[in-house]
Image (tube, rainbow over the protein chains, first blue to last red):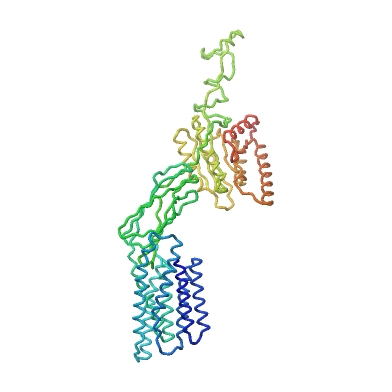
Amino acid sequence: MTASVAIVLAAAIAAYAVAIAPHLRGLVVLGAGAGLAFVVAAVIVAWDGGLAAGPALLLLAYALSLADSGTVLDRSAPLVAVALLAVVEFGSWSLEFRDGAEERPFARLPSIFALLVGGLVASTLVLTLGGVRIEAGLALWALGAAAAIGLLALISGPAISRRTR
Amino acid sequence: MSLLATPRLRAAIWLVVVGLFAALAAGRPEPAAVAAPFALLALAGLEQRRLRPLTGIFRLERDRVQQGDRVDGELTLSSETASDRLEVRFALPPGLVVEREELHALALRPGESRTLDLVLRCERWGAYSDARVRLRRYDRLRLVADEQEIELGKPLRVYAEKQALRAIARPLETEASVGDEVSRAKGEGIELAELRPFVEGDDLRRVNWRATARTQELVVNQLHPERNTAVVLLLDVLADVGSPRGAPLDQCVRAAAALAERYLARRDRVGLLAFGAGLRWLRPASGVTQVHRIVDTLLEVRELVSSGKEPRPLAIPLRTIPPKALVLALSPLLEDAIVRTLLELRGRGFDLAVVEIPTLPYLEIEGDEAELAARLLRLERELLRSRLRAQGIAVVEWGEGGSLEATIRAMEEFRRLARVVRA
């Protein structure tokens, strides 16, 4: 059940990315197809690497579909975020089920729902802030890049060291 | 305790990387907006450093059981930190099986303690000190998990099935102490050896009056003294081949335990010499304690099973075997090393007998090639037995369904009829 939800949502994101792509449709189809294939493989053969690569490829396909689509914001980006969050969440959950069913599986649903709502709010906030046009040119771009790199360093550093501990 | 990132956290990090760089490359906020929830998720993962150790106790009701028994046990787990999902896996050595319905992953609240009842089926003899439970605990968001192992509180000793035995193989020579074996020598005893003329100093109570009346001169009884013997059980643990139905080593161990018990009941001295990848021995001794010592040592001989490399020819320390001892080898006679050792012992002049445990009944032979190989193996074994018997070594086969009693009687028969050859 959880695996099916993950696959259906991944397929929906792939279809959405292909549908909104005005240009580079071939590349978008390729990325979305590969992402979907990775998610399917991950939940079928219990390959947890596929649950990282698959959604990442879907996000890449979505980003490609937005290229050259003008200055109009895609207001459904938070929904894409929530769908991707659900793909990761349900896909991981299906892998965990393979290692043993849970005593109270439905007890987890409220926390997943809260997570999705929180994700929707965070994504909407970032999209709204990102939509504000501030004419600061290269300086603002550099600031954004530095913030992105800083965030990545903050996230990946401890996580990687923890994984290898 | 080791901490690891779950697939969820790894996926979140990847999505943040892809989302942020796609946003920068495309100059659009949507990919960053998609990555934002994952960034928050990954940051939340960093907050999960405060997982306190999980405490657990894995214990069984009994620590000494017979093969085939079921033993009740329990696993108690308590955690100071909340764990959304706690996976419990039993990592038991072959020979132990946990009988339990499908085990569900548990959810523990902070400070909660849970006890799981379990039944352990002991399918094979042995000393099990490495039975353990592996636990994997996830945090509330299931972004990180920690793993730890809980060992069985006390090693479990599973004794092999008991084998009834009345027959024994009598050693050729006896020792100096009193026992149940009638010595070939003459002295103080009960069994009549022969009659001889009276000489000065003989005890008058030994005069055989019937013979004296017949021969018209004083004749006395010569008696055989009752002495004890020394037996060394030589256990071959060079290989442990077999199928789920059993293995020749199981039979070897059962025979060794039965023989040790039988000889020790006769006040004989019994020693044990187990050799495989290494050597383990118990000096010959008598008494009830020696029975326990031997049985306990037998439980640990599986550690000596060779790991598949060519076994080294072993030199048996001379002092481990008393000169007048009967060396009783229990072996499937699979390895050259054991054959060389037996021939070497015979060459040193030891009284030697072999209980051979055939391997073929334990193997699944299917197909023409396997049948042919089995036939060749049978012929080889027959040749090997002839070679050993030619050296005066009694070799008897104890088949899977046969009785040890009959096997030992056959051995005694062979030894009674065979002529002793001194090297």
